[in-house]
Figure (cartoon, rainbow, N blue to C red):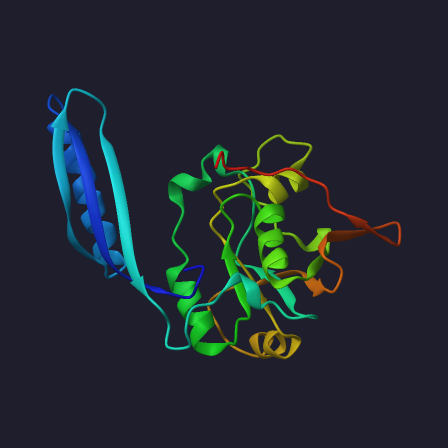
Length: 224
């Protein structure tokens, strides 16, 4: 979805607890239901048994949109930065009911020219920085426009969590002002939330008291 691709085949490796075959059967039925929903073929994989918990490893193969894959490195100066949904609060349960943004990515690709795109898996601040770094540009965020998930419960740092929580898997994308105006005049089902724009100065910035300040927030960092 983050590169505008279409999912086609899934390969499932599953390890079953010998004493709990019923759970494995339910898991497999769930996999088949999802494959049917997203028109993905379960094309192969591997099944093993052991005396331990259920383990599932999935690899999905996809193909590029006719326009080609969308990269992180093609953001342009003046692009509008958008996200496809509220952010933060995955740890509070949102990730258990998440819908992959395949349909949204296809609709956006069909109707608009997307310059750069990424999925928000490590937090907006870090993943948007990946777009900026790869494009040798920066971002100026409007903090008041960042959509915050209702799943963030009882927190006095909701904005910080919306910026840094991982596992959102919403799309973060950039498109020209002309294309954003085209979106506003369209009837697309996919909702876009504009949160800022691409600027020349490298890094992530925001406005406070009439001044631009550099955003210095930590997000999830992989061990490798």
